[in-house]
Image (cartoon, rainbow, N blue to C red; front, side, top):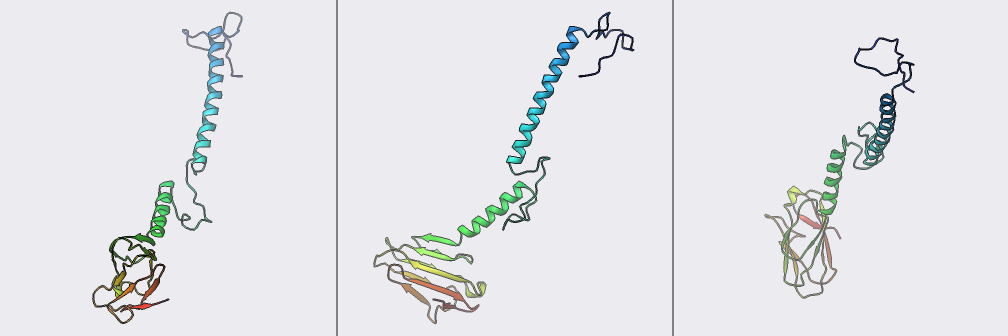
Length: 187
């Protein structure tokens, strides 16, 4: 319980907290009860705030500690930074698998191109071999139509000694690897 001074203690003349007998005034008792209830509410709110903070992945004091056992987030410095790192990694993974139904130029980083030529012939252009040394890309024709998936070069590169290659059958796959000068078959 809070300390309550007696009437003999020095208080400003306009403040009375005890009666003639030294008992707390009813107004003070009401105030102290309200204060105690308010402190309980503050304590409850503090608990709720800490729960929200820790539930969001932060430490109880609001700081961020990265998960050191994660593959991509262990260098994160904040939740925002962790989100950006994860988004970047997801983008790079999603960018590796590409489904197409129209002409497409392969990006270094694409891993597998799934080409659906059901509506028309598709031309897939490989990047310059000199910009993609040791890069491997797989190109698959996914449909059963008679339309070809033509794979063409950039610049003067050769693809397996020719200027182009074609996929003619459903589920036919060519895996190409750049030797830094030309594209070779890696099947």
